[in-house]
Amino acid sequence: MSIYKNPFSRAFWRCAAGEVKQMKKLTFAALMIALCVMLGYVPSVPLWGGAEITWGFLARSVCAWVCGPVLGAVFAVAEDLLSFFLTGGGGYPFFPGYTLTTVLGVLIYALFFYRQEMTIRRIFLAKLVTNVQNVLLGALWSSILYGKAYLVMASGSAIKNLVMLPFQTVILVVLFTAIMPALGRMGLVAKQKGKLKW
Image (cartoon, rainbow, N blue to C red; front, top):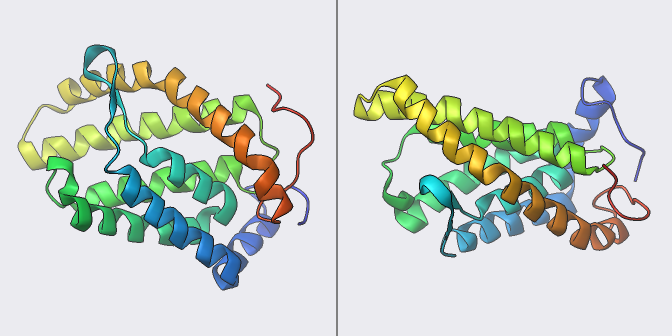
């Protein structure tokens, strides 16, 4: 596997576009879709202030890491639609804005993870940015669908996402540390030696 790429370079996006033609990556993305659907049935873990840990972000972040932003975007659309129709949407109506949120979340993960040296700081920043995106867009979609005040929805969501952030970061660090050697041996991600650095 070639060395790390700058996410703002042509080489990065050429590599990302090429993933769509690789059967190994297509198969991996399909497995991550199935995993996301399965994780939708796993009970969430309640935290303080109404925040709770759900588990779909694990498969989405791993898929973005392995498959990159182009195939990752395709995965995100397929995963969001299948998850909604197979699980009933978790009480939420179908709305394209939620699909857009999923796609942008996977793109953010891909920009931080795909063809990059994995570090704890990188994982934290990726989760921080996706959580901020969830706050901003989630409040917008709620205001459109339910006529609720944007700032009220955003402030409540911001508190919940702030509470979730350290837990989600730790979970991702543990997961990535555990699966990185296997993914490296399979040629799905760049091999890294030793533990994740800050």
